[in-house]
Image (cartoon, rainbow over all chains, first blue to last red):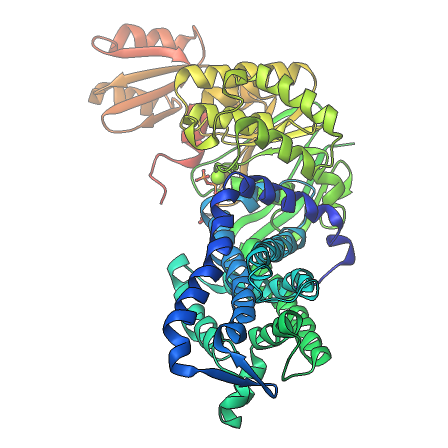
Length: 263
Length: 302
Ligand SMILES: Nc1ncnc2c1ncn2[C@@H]1O[C@H](COP(=O)(O)OP(=O)(O)OP(=O)(O)O)[C@@H](O)[C@H]1O
Ligand SMILES: [Mg+2]
């Protein structure tokens, strides 16, 4: 049933990307406030309230200040939230309540192109959020210049991963409030156990294995590497995992969404 | 060559058959209507025409091309006005048209000109910068029609374009459709307003339970399934009932009301007028609504 024809996927998807950009444009000032202020809040909170408790963090053979350890993870989690929310709640509203996709599917655009446009758009949005965060983190010294700028294209890659799995859930979930389930079962544990707030090397091996499955772990490692030049993993391995994740969940997302949209 | 050629088309949802082996053709320049009660399968049929739903079996050719293989070419030559409101609520009126034209990869300057023309044509120019959410039902429907015409389609598909509109808006839409018809645009329409179909379309099919139960020109169908002249009698007497039965008169007995199908100014008509029309009799021309009700029954659909 889910035959994929090469002719069904063309660059025509970019027009939907533009459509999303135009609607986003109207609210971008509000949207950019979040990535602009969020790192400040976290660093302030953790720097003032938390570092007294934990002191320094042992990471990759270095003794890091806690906020310096955690700041790159903020970038990675912002990438995750932005792209995952876009292809879950936002896409669901477009698909189910606004019937935007039904309208588009009366034009020479394929279902596959609609789905890919949503995923690529979500990744672009995540990339923009990360770029804004860096304008705060680089001057404050939490991210190396210019190396940390590579976090921007990396955010696009990470964004594709989270957007794909988000879109996969959107194809399955019956009602919008059911997104609580994948968030509770997948996003929340991932958010906590991906080397975000403490190094994965510090927890027992059996638990660390779980972290390896989470795409966020790989994104956090890569982001930290680009921001502070240190990592406990191997960058090529992290990149390969993210690519594999995108391919698998991109395909699965096409499958569930097509089943849902084609009646 | 026919603009639409449907051969033994079947559409099933799981085990439920929504469209059950229908065949029809629509010629270039024709205004064609699909009528039928709620759930008859009109929207399901239309969705197969523009390649939104795959056929369960059968063949559907549009412009001589197969919808399964050449859907992209076909859709670039079609305009669709869907039954539900699928306008983009996040965009303004004008943006809705322009963005839509991008999906067809229309030339930008052509699209801008076309959008202005259509805003004018549908009397929406004053609302060009309004948000779609702020439009009334009638305005939204007109915008949906304008959007369907953006890419200068050869075939316009209209799924209930006047449902929920007030009489003014309906007449306005009819005027526009009539004008488009004069320009030679081919159109497929579904509607629950029989007068709309009777006045606008050249030919129609009536569907019920996924099947086509009648096909023809509106006038021919009226002659065949109802009559040119109709007499409605409220509270018919037993005498009348007997008269009608004994003379094998074409009629429907609805209990409180008797409907007689007659010839205009014929023998039967004058007989009934003389003998039985003491109180309330209505003489009127037969119409498509008579045909529709006779063929699909008067019972309510789920
Ligand atoms: N996606 C679907 N899944 C299951 N059943 C469906 C689906 N779409 C339509 N149906 C069923 O198919 C039948 C025909 O529906 P369709 O929408 O084609 O009717 P319609 O003639 O357009 O009716 P209306 O006049 O109410 O618009 C209905 O019984 C409907 O419940
Ligand atoms: Mg319908």
